[in-house]
Amino acid sequence: MSFILGITGGIASGKTTVVNFFKAKGFPIIDGDMVAREVVEPGTDGLEAVKQAFGTTILQSDGRLDRKKLGTIIFQDEKKRRLLDKTLDPFIRGEIKRQIQAAKKTAELVIADIPLLYEGHYEAMMDAIAVVYVTPDIQLNRLMTRNDLTKKAALERINSQLSLEEKKKRATIVFDNCGSQETTHKQVSDWLKENKFVS
Image 1 (spheres, one colour):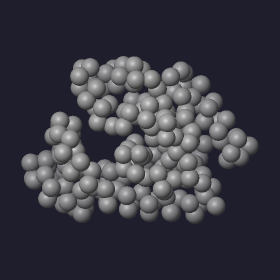
Image 2: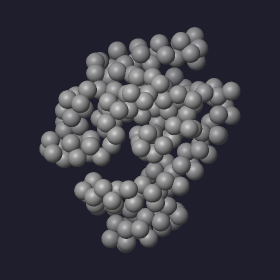
Image 3: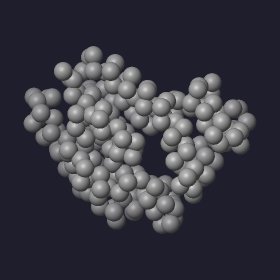
Image 4: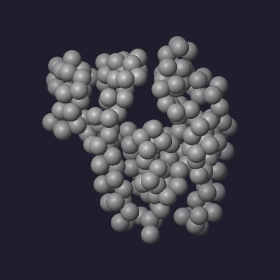
């Protein structure tokens, strides 16, 4: 039996650090962000659906999706963000499901890295959910520094997601990433040993 661990967090909470640690240990990773990009590649049904919903202005001259333009539209308009989520959900969910099933055949632990796990209601696909947690102050500062954003722009992005405090409450496992990477890695390592995925 394969164990499916969903990993989520908030923007700039350090989820990638944790996922990379699992990857380095050789566990297969289903990358929700990558799936979301793949389903809107030129020629896909996903891109066609987005075009139907938002018009051709969100395309670049080469026919690819103009992510920046689309991002600007949806971060400023809650209704349009919901429309995009609804439009792409069946394509993303179907592909994530397919990849999980394939990975289960070869690995006893499969990591599903899904940024909007709770927002997208992926809980039912997981055996457990780990949230990579940082305090609101750390999250804001990291995001402003990492993406070179104003406080207002950073808060807009943070507030477009379910809060980390709420995710922490719902999580099966919390990896606290407020300290050093070593401290975070130790928590992951301990979890793997406790659950006998590594000796």
